[in-house]
Amino acid sequence: MKANLVLKNASVYTVNSNQSWAEAIAITDDKIIFVGTDAEVGAYIDSNTAVMDLNGKMVLPAFVDSHMHPALSAHLYQYQLSLFNMTGKDQIQAYLNAIHKFVETHPNAQWIIGGGYLRSAFDEIGPRKEWLDEIISDRPIAITSKDGHSMWVNSKALELAQITKNTPQPNEGVIKKDPKTGEPSGLLQEPGAMNLVGHLIPPPPKEEIKKSLLWLQEWLNTKGITTTHEAMLGIEDRHIYEAYDELAQAGKLTLRYRASWTISPEGDARTQIEQGKALVKQFTHPHFKAHSFKFFADHVIEEETGYLLEPYAHRDDDWRGIKVWDDRILQKAFAQIDAAGYQIHVHVIGDAAAKYTVDALEKLVDLNRNRDARHSFAHLQLARPEDIQRMGKLGLSVHASPYWMNLDDYFWKLNLPYLGHERAFNQQYPFNSLFNAGVNVTVASDFWVTEPDPVKAIYNGMTRQISQKEFDSDYGSESNYRRVSDPNAKLENGDLGVLPPLDERANLEKMILASTLNGAYANFLDEAIGSIEVGKLADLVVLEDNLFDIDIEQIPETQVVMTLFEGKLVYSAKE
Image (tube, rainbow, N blue to C red; front, side, top):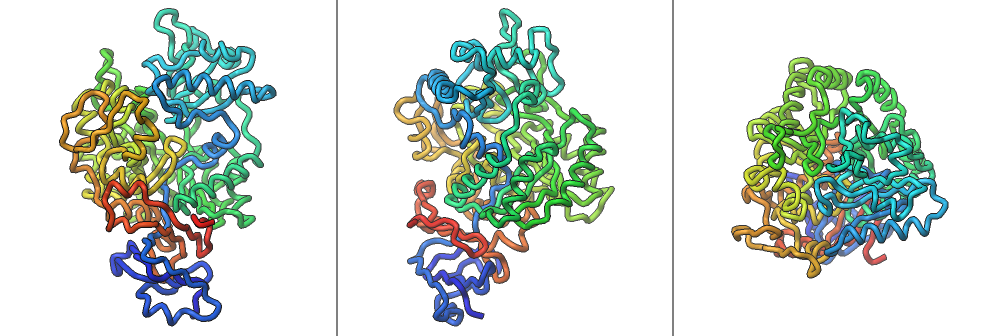
């Protein structure tokens, strides 16, 4: 068989344990037909073969981002108010200036919708409604935080939602109150509170979602990503899942999507799962399938809603966060999904959330023995060592976010005071321990929480520190922070150093595995992608430098040269 395309004179790291390195790859149509030496690949070349001499550049399997929120994030970036990536000493004023400008340039918008503010820019009460009221008081404003777990609203939005000082606190959320007046301050935390306003916001048109997804895939292809997981697909969000499927059916996707249907404790779990199971059968295109179910076990530390075994350190009321699900109800929901042969995908932040969710998953083993379930956790900021061992025995995947495994402003302003010294410095983000326990570790950006960049994630996982490049762009000379590169240095408040424990850093081989084959495995795609092997789809990324040959500090600077999706060139730096 002759090849359509040959890549030669390359440093091919295959992520195939039987053949780790190669020089050349031959591709016919969408499949890899040869992996080997430059001398051997000549047999696959004829006058119709396009041959690319890569001059020693590195070739890897294309990257997999195992947990993000593509549709809503892309729509926010393209159509809504964006407060992302705003830095400087007066961050709050920068936010207010951007909001004011957006309001002025969108005089006909019924709602001012946006996202991206950092909770670390504000005090415990959070951003205030009065600041927004001064910008506009006759139209509602609703802006979601960068972590996605809180919403900043003005008085008009509160009025429309009928939220007052007398509104009772919802089961799965918090309406922040002014400590002096008892009035709502303007911050709504977690779904129970956010949805009081959120359900009033008109959904974006399907055609806008489709345009946003086409924009997003171009960006993700520049980062070497060809597969991702839509981690929160609403059963009622027809405009979103139809947008994915219509693009797939039209042959317009250069990304492969897998997705999870969100199950909420606010409704009957059994009914929601049956609705999701019916929807699973509608979507069969290889570029869009949704055969997983998403649960929140808890929420996040920065909103005091991550569920902890020990109380939050800065409070004196024994507050341990929000446990989203009752054990009995969760167990029945898990059993219903597992028995039907589908996956379970759980947001887990706190160690108490990890414990009660592992408890529930362990009980499935007796119900459905020897099933290749590949259930998964996302995030996992805290977990007991014994629970990590249990995750390995269960064969779980953990969709980790190395982007967050560092000392940053969130650490100093929120994590340290909320968790206390021991948990903040010595227990956050177990990572190498997951690999050692036999957990299938993957890499996830949680976009929009973090802008996806797998090469950056590889560096973060190896160092547990932000790079000099990231420090210069996000903090720089105008901040009160300094970057400390010595992992053994004694740190002062505000130093952006290496997040302990140091033995939780992973090596390069593990980081590449997590970014490629492990992500494919978690999505039941390991027979098709994730490694460079004969018979697999030609999803490939070419990097300017061989990551094994350069200094670790150069890894974040390494550029993606080209990306192939099923044998087609979908990104070229030259173009």
